[in-house]
Each structure stands twice: as structure tokens, then as C-alpha cells.
Image (cartoon, rainbow over all chains, first blue to last red; front, side):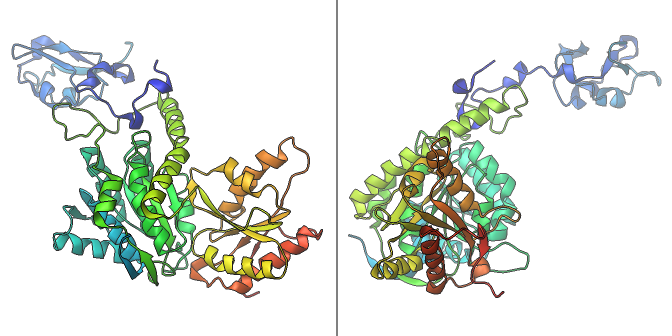
Length: 95
Length: 398
């Protein structure tokens, strides 16, 4: 941890993209679970995620980055699923 | 020497802002400050400055705009009074803790209720814990000189702190006095080009202002803020020395008036100090050794220097043009804290004896008779009379 003499006055963050270093996943009390067979790859979850917790590789949803997922549940709410079956469900953390 | 003119305090300060040619001025009018930003708006319209003027919809927005402009990278000014300063309150803390050197004349005015537009210090004293540097001014000349110096102080590389320059509403802001202006070029050279530190608009080096800092680092940032405040006194004195060379007018952390050989003394801010100095002279003529101390730098407060200047006195009255309801007056709290460290803490008998008078609230005239009443009481205390009431109101109908 930094000591006060090592800090930038005014708490100015002098590097871009530093939020990547600040892992917020520990705030979570509910965890999204991806059910691949119900996923239609609409990427609504990626679009609506307020952080960067939906991992998309070559245009496809591949799962969650739990280091940044705070468990807000927006992805599960927006997920249209397949034939009424959600591809993302929220479960209590530690279940 | 610059031009000698007969102007109001507001006009003098507006001219100091013009001479500083800030990049941005955010504003919202409020009596008795309005005259400053109104004049400044004319300078913008007339092309006398290169300033971007932002007409905000409130003082909260005005200070927010000043913060944004300052973080973006630029010399920024605004001005306010009373309720306007109160509405800025949360943003004042953000300006100082983000190290943004915004310069703001504060034309001191009473706070509501009851609604009152006249001068007292309840606005400025209410902002004493916001982390701003506060310079207080007795008259138009001092308000002008303090405003010019404020740019050098606040923008100093070791500080980067916002500065409030206080003067009494109406008594100074609207009264016409003789003042000596510096030439525009002298002020320009004195305060220098604005030097940016971490400007947001430096697009080659992206950065963020206003991060969330929780239990793990907040206290370290506050410790750093405390450290930076500790550097202010030296910068204020260095700038005052340079200003003396330029103008011939000498400033310090405070002004001592006939204090060195005094037995009784008064501590008083701003315009009331002028009236009180006349009464000091009158008491000296009567053979009573009276003196006066007028603080200039109130935040950070120069505790040891002021205590050293007062410790030989037998009795001191601290005058407060603001009350802390249920507490002593705000200046009294500082003076008694300062003296306790020098004469009280383990040194034996605490001296001098201290009394506190609340005066001049809501622009109530402060007359020589009130100063005479104070010095008469101090003279009696110095000769052995007991202190009956530590804090009392004067100039009020009983």
C-alpha cells in the first residue's frame, strides 16, 4: 500500500485505463451463471453490462469475467434466452 | 508607480482580476459581490481580457464550472458572497482537495436568517474548514493587493490551492477609497504565465480527476492535504516580499499595530481594524498602552507567530464579526488555542487574559465608542479586575 508521501496531490490518476487494476468482483452477492444451450448470441448481455464482465471472443459470448462482475443482474434481466429459457440466471454467491 | 484612483473595493478587485487575464470566469450574481462579476463581464465584452465567461444557474454550478475549467487546465476565477458561498459548500472541499488553484474574492455578507445583505464574517468563517487559503483585507487597497498576490500564492507549484480573498460587504465593496493600482504589465509580470499541472485537456496524457478513494487510501490523501497546507505560510511570506519590492506595500501573515510595547490588545479582522487603530492612538495619547493585531492569513492560521506577538500582553479582546452559536467566536477559538500552546501548556500561568466580543453582525455599524468600551474593559482587567463574562455581544440594544 502507498504511503502519503507517494501520492499524487489532488488524487489525480495519471494513467489511462487504470480501472482495469481495480477488481470489483468482491462486491458481488449474486452471481450470473451462463447456460450455453439457451444462448442465441444476441450479445445483449455484453451491450448492457455496465462494466467489462462479459467475455466476448471473436464476436461470441464465452462467459463472465468475475473479477469485474458486481452481480447487478442487468444481463440476466435483459437476456431473451431461447424459447423462454434464459441463458443467464442469477444465483446467490457461494451456492 | 501605477495609477492612483478613487474606486470602490469591488472595482479595485475587478481590476485585479482583469489584470490577471484568467482563462475562465464562472459567475453567478449575489449582493454585494455582483458588482465584481458585472464589471468583469464588461471587460470580456469590451475585449480587455481573453476570458471565457460562464454564466452559471447557481453558485453551486458556478463553483462546479470553475472546478471543471481548472482541472481542464487554466487560470480560473469566480466571486461570491454569503448564501452563494453557502451553496458552494460541498464544491469548495472538492476544489481544495483536488488542488485546483481557483481565485475567488469573497465579499463578506451575513448569512440568513433573518435575510440581510450587509457585511459580517459568518460566510467566510463558515468556510474555514474547506481547505481553502483565506486572505482577509481591511480596505480596498488591501483587497486589490491580496487579489494580485492570491494568484501567485494559489498557483505556486508547492501548493496549487484555491484562495478566497475576503473583504467587508458594502463597507469596503461599495465605499469609494483612494487606491494605488499597479500597471497592467507589472501585474502580468508579477503573477506570470499560468503553469498547468496535470491538465485534463492534455490529450496525449489521458488522466482522471475525482476517483473513489476508500478506507485504504483516503486518510493518506488527507495527510497529504495537511502537509500542503503547512507550506502555505512560507509561500505567503515569499510572495509578500516580492510584492513589497514591486509596490512598496508590505504584507505579512498579520499586521501588528503599536503592539510591541503594549499591555492591552485587540485582535480584529478587516475594516473594523481601521476604526480600532484610531482608538488605539487615542488610548496611547491618554497614556494607556494599547495595541492591535489584524490577522491577514486566517487559513492556514499562523498559530505560533500570532501567539508570539500577543504573549507579552496582560489582556486581549478578540473581536468576532460572526458567532458560533453555542461556542466562542471563531477567531477567539483560534487565538486562545494559539496562546495556550505558548503560555498555557506546561508553562505555568496562562496569559494574557482573554475576552471575546461579538460585534457588527448583519452590517451593524462598528463605532469608535465600541472600541473605547473594549479597551476600557481591557485596561481594568490588566489592572486586576476579574473577567466577568468571556464572551459577550457589544453594540446591541439590551
